[in-house]
Image: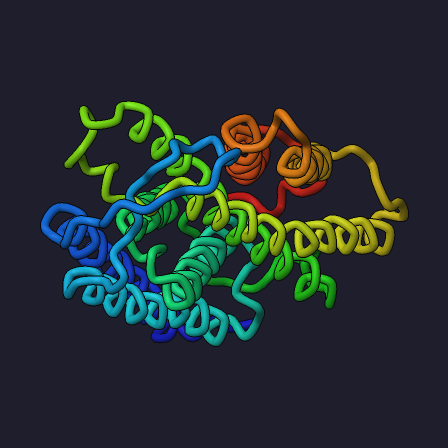
Length: 311
């Protein structure tokens, strides 16, 4: 199969443009936190792990926040163009290697953030903390995971690629936002615990702890069944390709460990004594496991999924 090099080059160019746009969005969101209107105080329900009173996000976002949101939306469109043009160049689905998979995961994370920000205005205030990891992830992807556009390896030429890998990308991208929300929730609790000493700090302008915890929980609830389906679809594909549903390959094992961790997080959110800070830490561990599964397991360990690594 021949590759349309002009489309492949366009995809690489769009990748750089997307990184640049997201970087501008980080600056805009940071300016919002630094110079935007200060949030008013509001009461927070008891039993959430947060103080009785915590700052709430302003009812409307100032121009810096709106600018950041607009630039992020444009960046997401360009980001999607990276995958579309790459897929068209090779005439296949554009997630056949780690570079494409990671690029798609980050795109899902950005889209999830945009949807949340449009639905819950307070979420716009975490834009800098979402887009900064997005920029770092894309830069690392471009530097260390980049692979020239080409046809799929034989092992991936299956209709199950569209099912298994697509749902894995969706699940990972959703958990990406959920994990960041839990990290910010823990930082918010620490900031609130400092009281007047932390007043006026960068973190004091974040949404209150209840909002962050709710975002983390609801995104995890949404992502968990998608990840569950991805694991099941992978097992069915494994039976079709290798004659067994499960073989404890490193990739399979860590995907299952991630599933257990997120199941534990959702259970902890309903268990007395584990709500709030302990549950948030479980969610953070889940994100670490997901990243470990993508990077270390693919790049260092060997197994039947090695073809998904670097070419």
